[in-house]
Structures are given as structure tokens and as C-alpha cells.
Image (cartoon, rainbow, N blue to C red):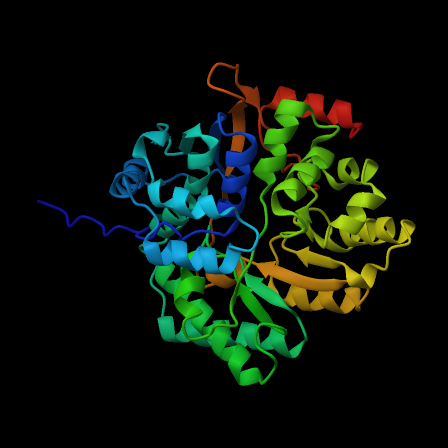
Amino acid sequence: MKTTPRPQIITHFTDQDLYSFTVGLFYLMNFSESIGEYSFVDRNDTVYRSGFAEEIMEQVRMMEGLSPTEEEISFLKGRCGSYMHSWFFTFLRGLCFRAKDVNFWQDEEGHLYGRVHGPLWRTIYWEQPLLSIISELSHEHDAIDPEKEYVRSYERGKRMIEAGVDFSDMGTRRRFSKEHHYNVLRALIQAQVDSGKLCGQQGLIGTSNVWYCMQLSKRYPWLKCIGTMSHQMISAIAAIYGPREANYEAIERWNKLYRGHMGIFLFDCLGSEAFLRNFSKQHAKLLDGYRIDSGDDMEEFSKIYEKICSFDIEPSKKSVVFSNGLQPEQAIAIHKMVAGRMKDSYGIGTALTCNVECVQPSNIVIKLTGIKLTPRHEQLHCIKLSSDIGKATGDPDTIAAYKTILGLY
């Protein structure tokens, strides 16, 4: 009996986060010859159904040759043209997915493994779509009521808006489905409009998903496309130049490229202690703010707040973005505790786009785990330590070496 083939899940190149493009340009400018290796990690050690890896590869093959459309490029240029090189938008016309970069397989028990390998400037664009595909395929047999979920999303947005929380959607990678993602965004936008507050300035600020921002901003032009960088950039720099100066080097290179734009720095890649140890007053003045993506939220906030104060810099003029697996209620609680000491906002992901009744969200990531400076160099291990115990990703021996070098034992 013939089975009906699944429809293609990712049908638009920009159905992913803005940081893929900002870091993609960074790689072109700094590591244009570098080869990256990304690894799939399931933190729940899920046993997937038989044939699941092949289902993923079917989707990957459907994406062969998918490239940004003129409309997508025009949108990116309109939103990012003030800080991205003009030639980058010409480059995007020739950029497309190559299925040969990707391989997924399962062991006899059904555990899932995956690898993406190729030029960094190209392979970076696989992370978000692959995670979205895996999450959606995982949930394809879970039935939900779209109208009921719309109301639940509206109420979550309404509670945050009424509490004075400024927040954005960051839920592309582990969403229930792309249709549900769109439904959630519609609900959040309506909650914002109904609130009577200044759209785009209070409450819902935007979404990290470029495609949905492009579609929805046609009617709601205040909706921002948000995002700056990802951990992988710092992991790559640490592998090549060493972990001690990786954060310093990342800030210098990032600022040289973006010239004061995109100034929210992700400071926990090697643990916040490693960042703060060689964080200078010059950089504290240069950066607009900091994203807290691991560790205890208020402990990490206190560390960065006190460091800024030690430089005699007014902290209320700096931003802090919380994005560590937040629930809306957590965002409300943190906002009350920050109490105006810094300009706080919240990037909320799975709790918005896969917070549906009777469904357990996936806990999956794709991390940069290897890099060759050029095709002729040996491959080096890329490591992410984070400020959460047990969340380090990468080669165990290299993790231990980094901890020793950074004095984290």
C-alpha cells in the first residue's frame, strides 16, 4: 500500500531566527574558509519511532536548493541594511540549502543522532529548520484545538502585557508546528493591540523568526525582528584562539563588523565567571546589554549588574534580556525583582510555541562541536559550557581542559 508523502515542512529559507543571518555574515567576514561540524543532542535521550531519521532526511532532501526569495531579501535589507554590508544581500541570492551537508541516523534502540558538516557560512542556516522539523514530526500525531490554543496564548500574552513585561517570541526551534507558531503570534499580537499600550515599545516587541515577522509586519509594521548572536560564534573563537580571551575577541570582532549595532552580548557561553574575569570598562560602555540564557536568573543578573556598577556606569541605561527556558509567570516574577535597575526584556520560546495541553515539548539542540580554520587544518573541538551545571556540550576531554584553563573546578 502506498503512503501519502508528508508535505514539506520548511518551505521558506527565512523560516528561522535572525541570528542565523547576523552570525552568517560574521562567519563570512572572519572565517570564510572554515569548515564547521554541528551535532544534534537530545537532552531527554528520547527513543524515536522506527524510521524517524529517514523522515527527517526526506524533509532535508525536499529543501535541496531552497534559497531566499527577492521578497525575503528585500525585507532583510529593509530591516538590517543599516548595519549589514550591502553586498551580503546580493550574496543571499546565491545562498541555498545543500542536502549533502546533513545526515541523521538512529541506533537499534531508536535514539537519534545527527550531524551537519560543511562551510560555516552555509551550514549555520540548518540549525533552526532542522530542529523545527524534528519537533514538528515528533508531535504530528498529537491533536490540538487551534481555537482553544489561540485563547490560551492570548491569555498568556495578556498577563505579561498587563504586568509591564516587554517580551518577544523566540520559539522557532522547538515549536509544536509552524501553523501553531503562526497561531500563537496572531494571538499575542491581538493581545498587544487590545491592551492599548504603545505597540512595539511596551509588551510584545517582536519575534526572532524572520519569515513570520515579514508576513505579520505587513499588517503590523511595529513588529520587530529581534536577535543578535548565538553561542556557536564564541565557541568557534574559543576553539581557534583559546577560551581565556574568547569573549574579549568575540566582542572586538563583533563590534568591528557591526559598528555599535547589535549590541546585546550573549555572555554565558563559557560560563559567566569566565566572561566577567576579563570584562573591561571599555566593553561595558560599548555594549548595549546582555542576554542571560543559563544559570539562576537573578544570580546572573546580580553579577552583571554589580560589574557594571563597579565601572561607574549607570546600569539603568543598559539592557538585560532573560531567555533561559522561561515561562510567562517567571518573566513576570523576574520583572518585579529587577525593579527598573536595568532595562529588562524577555525572550520566550518553547513556553509560547509548544505550550499545548497534554504535549511534552522536545528538549533538543544542535550545537557547533567542531571547526577547521581552513579545509587544510585539523578539526578542533568546539565547546559550550554555559552557567548551568550539566549542560556543557562537546568533547568531554576538551570540556575538562576548558574548565581547568578557566579555573572553573
